[in-house]
Image 1: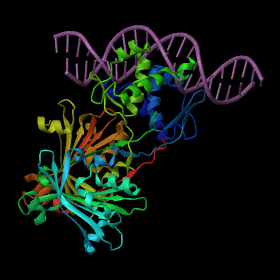
Image 2: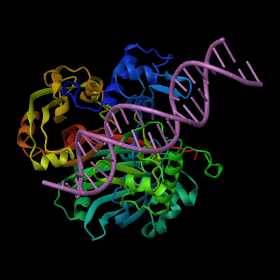
Image 3: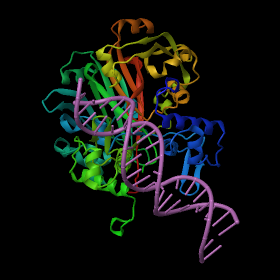
Image 4: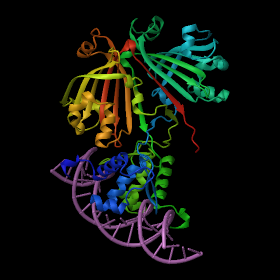
Length: 247
Length: 247
DNA sequence: ACCAATTTGTGCGTATGTATG
DNA sequence: TCATACATACGCACAAATTGG
């Protein structure tokens, strides 16, 4: 169309104009927008274009439209909420479905002060620790992994090697608890000697460390997992989506 | 209309029918829906009605519609369950409020094929590139940062150095577009020589790279930012909360 | 309770633009 | 280059909800 208008569709230009007016107070909160017919006349566009623009304002929660009544301005600065596009916890590991965890050691441990602080704010209790190497289907090593399971669920000790799914899912099923929140932290540090040896990488190789705390409704950690990935091959992706009213 | 169909509008009935087919596997994930024209013929409704129905499926993330290509089925059960505890995009950088970006170079660039692929699936266009060093309030270097801004917003070129807030916020305000989604990827690689020099770290130092693509409603990247952090001091945390859905 | 005007919702037809393969 | 398929945009008509008389 015309280059002066930025090359964007007319309904988007119109939506932007109306939003500017709302934010400037031309259409005050609590009042109503001009009718579709008035907007059609003012901007010289069809009703279809006006309605597409008003749909944008409605989705972004600037206005509330009611048949027979009009378009009420409900906010001059709607706040956004972003949603992690993830349907289940197992998608936290995008690779989880195609990997297996080869455990090399399972034991009850009592962490020292530094580790206890990392595990969470629980009192100085014992944890069931499982460590091993996560491998792709072909056998290639992905990470050195250490998992701490709260002693409350220590009955799993004998079965850790042959669970069909993720450990957190089994704990939810067996013990009737629920993972309400996951706190994840990504950092980087060189591999510890034993981790390097287990993965078969040179000592001192740089690793990306992912720590996840699986928390219940009171923020108590049920499981804490730590994985060290060779930095050269590590990649982690996520998508965050702005929320709006569904249909 | 007819009582057998529930008295709901035709486009809602059609949307319901299509969703049922997707969930039943009639239209498998990864495949495409029939074209608008085919749906028009099958259901005996106008293209307008078909498009209203498809808009519902698109908003509910059942399909992804692409001009010229079709409506790809992307999920048979699109409800997200975990929510990233984040109120605004600026919280992506937990430090954003207390940092500043010292730009050392701003220029229009035409990326090569490899970079263009990383920036997104836009045609081979030019981007406004800004690069510099992000620093804490005290002046300590945090990261080497390179930002690519779509040429549509190149008018910002002269102001990049003195924006009050994040670039994406200014673009939303000035151009009336909206960041609907952010795709983030974390990986690790050694610093490039010029980045190492700019940060004052030894050549070959390992870096954690964060790439973020800020996408509009059609998944077109508006801004792409890349930051390289010295691995030794990098840490990134996030929390994901389970959502209780009524039904 | 009813009517009439207003306003948005639904639905159809048509034409042209633009990205894709 | 060309056909296909979705995006944008114009027009019209009638339905349904709201409002005020």
